[in-house]
Amino acid sequence: MMPPRAKSYVDLVERIMRMVGIIKNNEVITPESLISPFTGYNYTKHQIKSKEVKYQTLYDLFKLKNDEDVYIKVEHAIKEIFYELQKILSMIGGISHGIRYLHNSKWDVNISSFSVGVFSKDIGMGYGLNEPNQDNKVLESFLQYYRECCEKVGMEIKP
Image 1 (cartoon, rainbow, N blue to C red):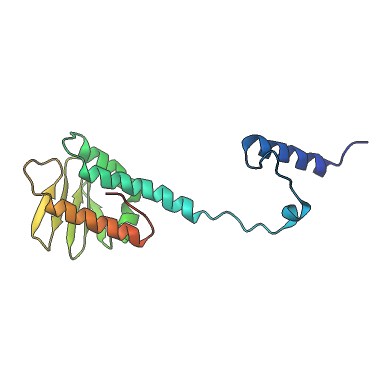
Image 2: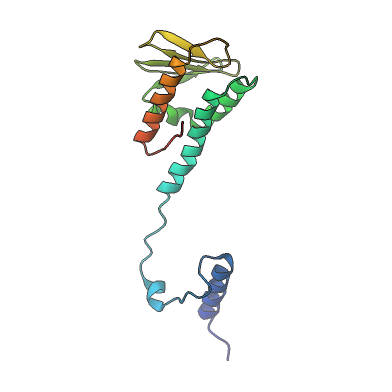
């Protein structure tokens, strides 16, 4: 006599789950575990980790020195997260003539494929990536602000 289709399907799925390591080989599946309500997978942690990687990449690019293509790399990194970045950094932003800009009461940030600049309204000084002989105080202050804003939404950015 042939086993019912549902039973053979369950056996097949169980074998596959054991092969890929979802179920351990010595683990026993009880009927209770099969009929218990599934609470679902929490995607929040995965989404935060995915965002964290993008924001960490942008952070690292701001710190990059002596790279001829840093402007292009920053522009590509920011394209994906630009509108969300505005919210996280509590800034108003936009795109005009190929330049992405962000600003609030403390900061002005301008990004294009030929320049990246950060201006601190508090200090009254600016910092341009890849420009020689600059005081890093503006950049360090901005990156601290960047990390603090990311931490508020649950992302840990490593200095």
